[in-house]
Amino acid sequence: RKEVEQDPGPFNVPEGATVAFNCTYSNSASQSFFWYRQDCRKEPKLLMSVYSSGNEDGRFTAQLNRASQYISLLIRDSKLSDSATYLCVLPEASGSARQLTFGSGTQLTVLP
Amino acid sequence: GAGVSQSPSNKVTEKGKDVELRCDPISGHTALYWYRQRLGQGLEFLIYFQGNSAPDKSGLPSDRFSAERTGESVSTLTIQRTQQEDSAVYLCASSLLTNTGELFFGEGSRLTVL
Image (tube, rainbow over all chains, first blue to last red; front, side, top):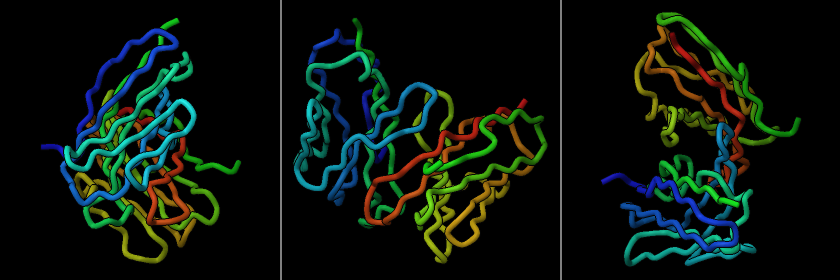
C-alpha cells in the first residue's frame, strides 16, 4: 500500500457545489498534514496546514480521521478559480518534516 | 524577487548529455528540497538539504543524479548522461523551518530529453 493515496478524479462539479476529497495514509504516526493546490503547469502552493483534528479557513475545511487513517478536504460554494489539482501531504514517519510524502493529487474542475 | 527562483525554466537536451539545474531559495530558508514530477504524476522526493548537515540523498534515483548546495544558498542538481525517462519537471522548494510542511516551491525546470 502506498503511504499516501488519493482518488485522482477528475471531479467535475458545477459552480457553487460542495465537493470533498479524501486522502488515505498508511503511516499512523502522522500528527500533522497539509493540503497543497497545484494549478495546471504551475508549482504546488500550500493551501492549509492541519496540526490537530481539523482546520477551517473560509470555504475550505480539512479534517483528520485517525481511526480510519484518512484526511479530507471539503470545499463549499466552489468557484471557477478552485479548479486545480489538490495534493495531500504528510510528514515522514519519524515526525520530522524533512521529508514529506505527497499524494498524487485529485483533479478538480469547477464548471460554469 | 522574493520567491524561489529556478533556472533554466525549460531545457531540451539530447540523450547522453549532462544537464545542470539551478535553484535560488528564499533568503534565510535553511531547508531546501528537490522534487521530480513526471507528466500527470505526483511529486517524487529527490534530495533534502538542511543547513550544514549532511544531505538526505535517499530519493536520488541513480548515481547519475547528484546535487550540491553552498551553505544556505544556491543549489544545483546535476543529471549526467541523461535518459529519456529523466524527462520531467524538477521542482525546488525551500522552507524556513524544518518542523513544518510549509514549503515554498519554485516554478520548476522542465527537462525534455530527446
